[in-house]
Image 1: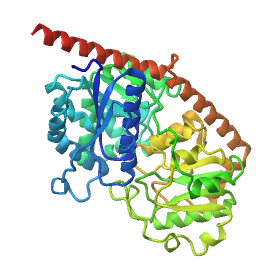
Image 2: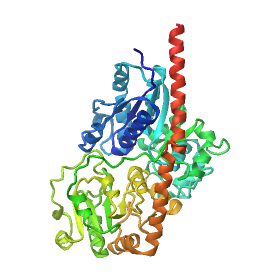
Image 3: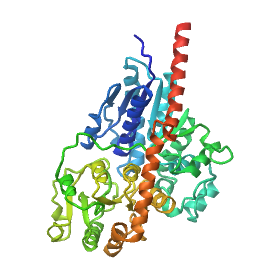
Image 4: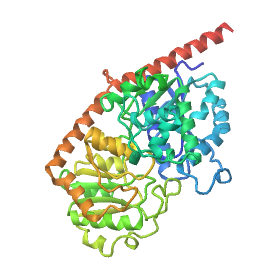
Length: 481
């Protein structure tokens, strides 16, 4: 019997920042809109991916595409962006074969920003094509706008270090701009501009934000006199899509320890699945936490000098003991107030715990949404990619974070400044106001996702309707032939 439900194929590039929201989008399409969903994952062998691959639900299937060998295709010093772009390009034949092998042909293909070259496969197989920006609307704005500006405007930003003005949006300071745009001779620049050109070729652009979080930027993306002339296609805010607290998470050391702490008394410290600190910065952070005299949970990975994204593709096994790279005596001195966890911790469950009152974060958008959706204020510590833009959005626009005056991606942030920021978030009057704002955004995000008229629910419903119409048209055409 022919399938009567729309079937969406989703494509996720490597990295938890892409995979997590893609999986959550698939779940919502199944649960709230009656879809069959197949998620194609271009995953490295990072063990953390495996838990998501097991989180299947009825009518949702996850297929892991074979890894591609790219070292011979790129320079050894290539950036993450270049590696991801080349990896996704080389995966296209496998994706095409996997789609053709499905029992029912997908109605639509939804890719993340590194998968836009798969539009050719969607067109060949008569599928609707969408791109899912798993970050925020401001990042989407600069991504699609940069390819349209002339060299003089670009020179003013890159060479003269003037802010880049984006119609209808907050300007991007030079200090916040993506590293991808700073060297026009680098392949990263070429790949990012290509992505910016290809995104508006979709039938629609999904973005992991919601109306009340970024109203001005979303308005500009729809306004034909502003960014709408660049976006060209409908923009659908469908967030916040982030991991929910798992119903079957076992009580482990971290959660048991948190159970014994006062409400909102613990600061959680983590730099995501790919972020790393230098040896000097690791030492200063340890001293800053100790001097603050606040309770903490710190997810620690061995330091890597001169590579802030050092574990994005190559997650260490954690065999290096923490005492070998933390200040002498730190673990003993802080054993009563702090918990140091090697490599990985159940972040969503930690942020949802009532004992947690702050999050020192690299500002990856996944972590940001996990913090906001739990009403937890942040210390913004950006390391790479669009994280500096995210940090500015959190501190200057949304008011849910504080940020070091010293650029964490450029210099070592001193222990005194770290101590001050931790105290500010955890015990100052200013921190209580920031926490109040974070909780207001939590409820705003919940409202957006509500099936009772929420703005993000309605956005995804529009896409579902388009897919259903396409399916009906396809059936009518098949019957007519």
